[in-house]
Length: 193
Image (spheres, one colour):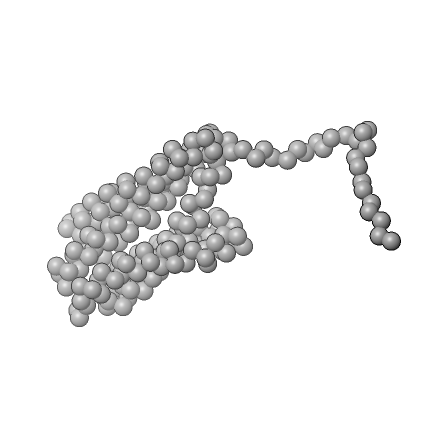
């Protein structure tokens, strides 16, 4: 009883004037701007995280927060990296629902706010919340969505573009570690954040 109806295009039908976009990435051009942007994001995110070792050395030598143990100080840095990676499922959902740009903007705001809050900390639990938890959330919202952007712009030179973007983390780590050390010595801990 059920009849199958097949529709075939007429030979006289005109082809679509809006062809679908190509499935291949542009492999260059603006993709290099995107690669540089991701390298800068990596430099600021992972660079600040790597500079925590300089903060840690200062905290331990100066006993900055009364009653805090070496393990507590070390846990702050570990917490930020752990939270960055643990919120991946949430970041994926946010990027899908809100979009990549808004998700990354929220991350940049949280990351900046965490450093301001860390500079105002006077108890160790303030540092756990600011430089540990809030920085980790901000870093996750900023770094994780940026990871997939390069694949949209490259196919042939994807490995090179990824290498350049990831090298930003190492360059940021070097730069921030040297800068934080100099700022703590010459200005104060509060200005080093």
